[in-house]
Every structure is written in structure tokens, then in C-alpha cells.
Length: 473
Image (cartoon, rainbow, N blue to C red):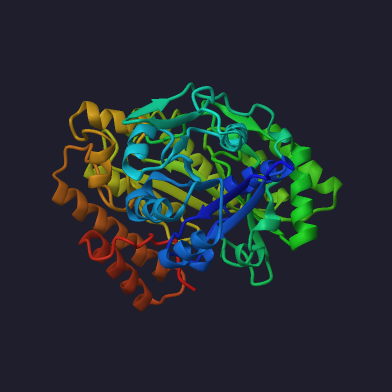
């Protein structure tokens, strides 16, 4: 009888309690189980298992493949030491890294972590080929979408085309995960204590590519509205989920799709709440009304800057006027508003930072504590290569030597000296924190604590600080 492959996905710790469901491994697990693979999940994120506990778990078990997915922001702090533990206790398993973190820089990741393989981009088809190759003891040269070490050299195979028809991908394998943890650990905007909250995606990609975006695939691909609503209905009936956090990079990009989504919910008698992300350039009163009718509680708008020169440098393909119009319409519709701004991009000045702060204050719905982060040139984005071109970064190793937290300056693209840059950003966020508490709870002691957290972060005393919108239960 043929051996059933055995795969382990390790969900690394984020050192916080508001953990989003790991959809990537859940989708992969669904495909693997459909194809006769035994899959186990090790959730360090919600259980905070230590390295010693992980080592003992690996010593007790045998796996063919151990998968770890991550963002670049987590690499030096979490993933690099995690890989050392896995490599020491994996026995004959292949350690496979994936996700947006390693995909753009696979050679660096292989040489730094000692991983066996990096999967570049979407992994549904690639992982099944890898598992088959591991069981058959076959070579890796013919598998698209991977990089691996061949002696002392990194071999980077041809990229694999992303999945076109997302409806062909089965629903995530929720049954393998501690769902009672994931449906209770988020505190989203305008949710009450009875709401059961969970995340999902209805599309992959975006219609645009900003200069700070490290996504590798071009364009946007969508699931059918029918397929999306079937998942919503299943989660509602099985886990009582009624508040959905739409993880799509861009949920709102077509008025027709939102109209179809509203009609499909109505036909099935589903009344839900949700939060989502939107571009500002197609916003009008009709779209806001449709979103409100669907149950939209909170809308993240990627405004990014109050300065047109900076927006153009970002390749945002939006205008300041469109930002303001979208904010006004959303606030008038009484939908919670996430005013997302970053600062420190090409063309930014102290004046643009002040204007960002004033726009947040003017249109803030105070559903969420909004602060401003410095732009970070993560490997794979246009800004990363621009930083190398300007001799502000040498390579990936240099990036991770300089990066410690996404709320801290990594590369300065402005003409402002670093010390003045950091001081201005701290003062801007101090103002926004104070303004938030003055307009919400009035708890100025809490405001002072948050300001102290930011100050400690900027002084390097607490780089594990996760920003103003995370919390500890």
C-alpha cells in the first residue's frame, strides 16, 4: 500500500491576540486532503507555543514536508530563528517557505535559513507537485514556481502562472484549525459582543500596483459572487459567523460586483456585517448606498497621501480630490472609515505630513485609532529597487539589517534628516492619539500610555510593539 504523504503547516507566532485566520495554509490543506495527503496544523499564533514545545512536537512526529508562510516584516524577528529550530528537528522532511516574504528574494532566503525550498507566488499547484516529488524521491528541476539549493548555488525555476479560475479552489479546510479561537479573537469595527467574526477573501490581486506594493502577480482575479455567498452561508450555518473581514487587497473595484453581491445576499436571506478595502476613484453615493445595504460597517480607503506629487510618485493613479470626495461620501453614509496614510515616500515633506494629519482629523469617524506609518521598501516592491538604485540599500541582507518594525524608519526617501524625520512622525502620531481619545473615551491615561508605547518604540526599547490598532486581551 502506497504511503500517504504527511505535511505540517506551522503558523508562526505574531506575539499578539488579535490573530487573523491563516487562509493560505487553509487553502493548501483543502487541496492536499482532497488529494490524499495527511495534513496537520501547528498554531503558534493563537497558542503561543515556545520553540522548545515545537522541538518536542517535531521529535515525536515524522513529516514529509513542513511549510511556513510569512511576510517580510516577520523574517528577522521570528522566521529566521524558527527555521533554525525546524532544521534541527525536521529529520527527513523538506522545509518549504512561502508567501510574500520569501517569494521576491528566494536565493537570499534559502542561503540564510537553510530551507530546502522556497515556493514563489501562489502555491496550490506547486505544493502538490512538491509532495509528489518528495514521495517519489524525484528531482526538483522540472517543478515550476520554486527555488532550491543545488550544492552551494540557488536554482530558481521558471515562475508558475497564477490560478485563473478561483472557483476551482476548494473552500479553506477550516476543520483542521482551532476555529473556536479564530472566531473569537478579533474585535472589528462596529461589532457588538454577540457578533462572531471571521475573515475570507473574494479575490486575489489588485487593479493597480503602487510603488510600495510587493505583490508579484499582475491584475485582479475574482471568485464568482455565487461562490463567495456560498462560503458566507456555510460559515454562518456552521460557525455562526455573521461579521466578515474581507481580506481582499481590493474588495471594492466594481459597482456591478457590489450590486450582484447585494442581490445574492438578499436572495439567500443573509444579513451580514463586514469590513473591506476600497479604492477612492470609483466612489459615489450610489456605491456607498450599495455597501451600506450589503452590511458594510467599515471601509478602509487607501488614500496614502494628501499631496498629489507624492500620489503620482507612488503610482497610485488617484487624486487628492478623489480622496476627499470618497471620505466625505463614506462619512455621510455613516460607514466607519479607515483613513490609511503612509509618509516618507518620494516627494514627501514635513508639510505633507501635517496635511495628512489634518485630513485624518477632518474625516475621522473614530471607529479605530489611526496613526501614520513610514513607508517601508519591502523586498519585491518598486521602492526596494529604487532604494538600491539610490545606494540607500545594498541588497536583501542590508534591508533586514536596517528593518526592525513597520512603524520605524527603514529607508529615508525624503530630503529631511533622519532625526527630524523621526521626531516629526512621533509628533504627528502623538497628536492623532490624543485627538482620538479626546473624541472617544476621554481616557487620557490610556492616551498617555499609547504615546509612551510609541516613544519606547522609536527609542528602540520595544520593537515588538505592533502599532496602535493591535491589542492584548
